[in-house]
Image (cartoon, rainbow over all chains, first blue to last red; front, side, top):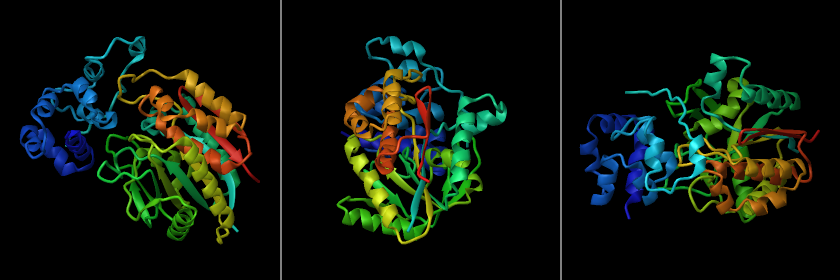
Length: 105
Length: 267
């Protein structure tokens, strides 16, 4: 029931520079400050985008996992990961991720 | 008496400004933005009201209004440092924003109001093209286009009608341009990323061109919007503007891969 906490963590990563810096340097320490269930923490730290999607994390906020390359998620594996656990859909064939200008602070 | 001189709808691709700098004259979106921009310039507005959906930059789940009037004196954006475009300071228009807020509440719209704003790319990309140099003040109207439950599209038509009544009654002499920011159908980083629901986008274009705004609003259920991808709730901004244009049909409307570019004129 704490999907809100995951959404908040990702929202802060994009919108709060000091928080983002900490997330990129010591993510394990930062997420201890959030009230996550074991299942949520495991999904997040293993970069299980598909699982997080099914839990109800907002896709705009999930994007920040690849944008800031957190927990092993990147532009090349994001789409295949979010589709994990979903039935195959021919529309997936048209999927691609935009070239992003990553900014590391 | 203020006057609505123009309404428009455009998308806000976060990389459009950057990409057209890399290869000028190659992007269809650049040409269409310029086409809309020329009409805005010709209409000589004094003020822009922009209907937009924040992308978790100004609002978050801790406090997320269905409809909100922006009444900051000025605000900066885009805040997202992954969006390669100039950073702007955009002036607001506090007296008009306050009057709109009061008019709306008295008209039974339980609006929210925000006196501080962090502008995202969805607000600033259209302004880059349609408000060069950020010369004109801008009053944002935010609709919740992304966090379920979305406001009903039929309610957005009513919101647009209220905005039009307000403009017609506003004591100022401003010439006002009303701009919708958003796509018709798109998925950004959801499982359907890269796929465009062309059938839905074409239906939207057709109904807008014919001036069948109520029909569009009835068909734009949250279920239909979500089926077209996670970004498709931005249609509510177009529908809000359609509510404000009355019976006027667009001067032109061009589709472009799930996006639309349109202008309505009233002079």
